[in-house]
Image 1: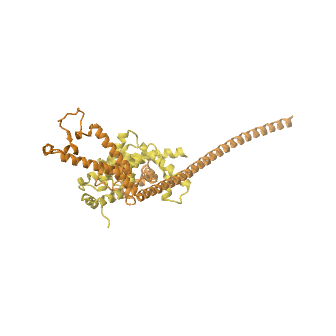
Image 2 (image 1 turned 90 degrees about the horizontal axis):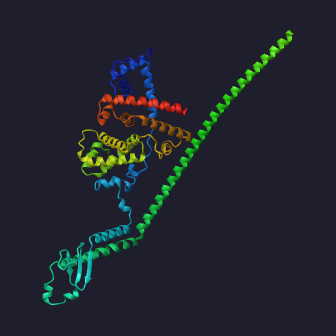
Length: 282
Length: 190
């Protein structure tokens, strides 16, 4: 090591980085740079300093992610990738949020939706002396308008054969549609009630929820305790550092005072000596 | 039996969802770590990690194995990180995230570590984060890929789309800046 000016033949920065990461340079380049290191103090110092940086970098770890994605097998329910095959979009962004909604709420939402839809469509269902009437749209009713269907009530159908033959051909289909709608409405209203009567699943779900909440609370308490301990340690360290700094300052101040005192004593002594010498001469 | 990434990809394309889950299990930590070190926020790193696998899954049929699966995944993650930084218009890793609990992390790793050591470790991690925040994006990416993910110079060059010598220069410059910043921080601390 004789000079601080680097005279490496070639791109010295590249060579240094290549040498820094073992195994990425060939033997010849490596030997060449090692020979250079032996005579170049600047490169040797750079290399050592950058190795130190790498050591510090190695201590930087990302925090543990607090989500279940890291171990889908341990908790398949919360694995956002589990239903990627069927629904890639919702699987990641919002994993089956609707399953968390109770059945009664889903039915209520469906009924509200149907109600709103019927309102928007201005659905008008009447059953009067003229029979069952189902009408949609915002125009005023007309007798023979498209979209306005009528079914004569059973009492009015008990007439002559000619009256029966006068019934339109779509009447049966409409009656079937009406029956199906009624069945579906009835099923939607009764279904969830009967389903909720089966208590064990709900109870199990509640117990599971309580267990999860307790686990969360426990984890939170542990974290808080850890954080508290950490804060205390930090405060203690700060206090100690401050105390040390104060002690050093006090020590320095004392030293200064002692110095001044010593100087003063020395002066007094010299003055005294002078007086003594003067008095002896006289 | 342990399948290779490429075998798992082939099985996933064939409709085996367990194989894709296996790939997720295998690569989610590195991808999350890459995202966290690049953008510096745990929540956003998590989102980037999930989005990376979502995009990978969608694009899986088009993966022909020209590159390693991991390199392909890293490229998706890096693009997402870059988008994130541009979209948010804020410098990444300027502030260490508030909810980073290195105490838990360190305690889990080394239960016998003293609280003073944990404090020191936390301080050091913050110092590194602050120093990394100073780096330009290209230098930071090069350092992260090399230091924390062990990619070769060639792999990094292919991943970020620049010549090999540029990767080395970025690494050297980045490490030099880090050296200066960490020294500055040490002087401040002392």
